[in-house]
Length: 309
Image (cartoon, rainbow, N blue to C red; front, side, top):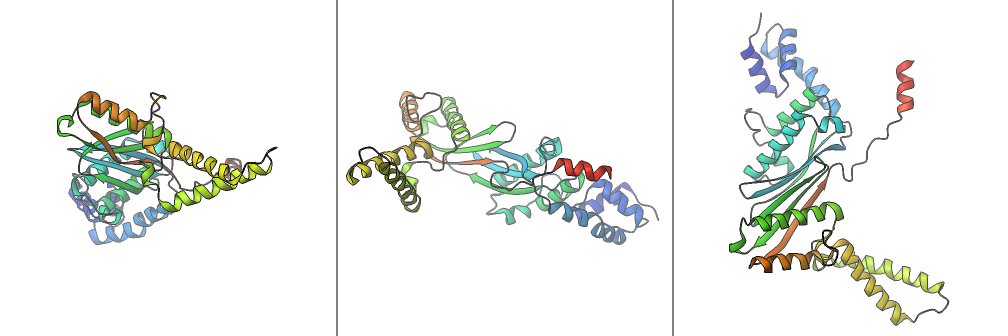
């Protein structure tokens, strides 16, 4: 029994498996649809599951704004080469569009949403990309802003994606100068990696831990000093260093990289005043591809030796 192109399409829609694998499955089962599904479960899906166990620490972080909805997403692959593949890039951008449109509450909800133009879910399309591209592919995380003004910035072809959320006065909505300001802030975030928006956002536990470290450092320095300082002076030294911690870790207190004479907070206020309105940085998200993922260390010499045995 033979099979048609429509049979291949039907099998693809039923299983979410790539077109070529569907053709192989139908050929192996002599056109029998149930047999082809069984074949794919035994061969195709098993292959996808095997790839899913491999470390995916490369990939792409991507930020974009769709009709005033800001989205940033990270999708991982195994190699930087695949991360530049057009199929992979298209998948990442389409996933971002789905997040903007449907507002999933988490990754689990995202995986059941429809992938554009296919009749498949995001999960099925991801599985298809694993089989077609030949590497483990995994949607890792995302963030979404659906209020106020969002500005997106992408650095080094997907190495870093930044999304900034601004509250602006009505007279400055869609103002090009505010968009430029948002891009500048996003570039600051990409380069300087702030952990907090403002010093007021630093939680008590983090601040207490930092003070403890700084106090220990100050006491250690005092031990080796020719003329040890009294405890009251050491306390003041620690408070001064806490201020330095804010400057290094809090976006609004950081020195603005494009003008090292003012802080980010001062720059935002100056631009808002010049434009005759108000601008407030409400929040931001910075994703760097592979951040925090332990990468597999390859022993290329051993790999080559094993190949020539």
